[in-house]
Amino acid sequence: MTSGDRLLTLEGLLAHLRDSRIASYKLLERLEQRTAFPRNPVGKILKRDLRTEIARSD
Image (cartoon, rainbow, N blue to C red):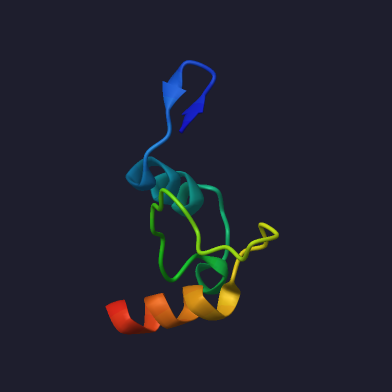
């Protein structure tokens, strides 16, 4: 992803969140980069399938 002329990385995003005075309990537990989400024929994201994929990877 890009923001203007800068490249957005997962590490950079995490560093920004840590430095932005957000309470630690509000920070993300997990951050993952994906190229695609599981979708139904209408185009909605299948959250159930996404949760199953996440549970398998833990």
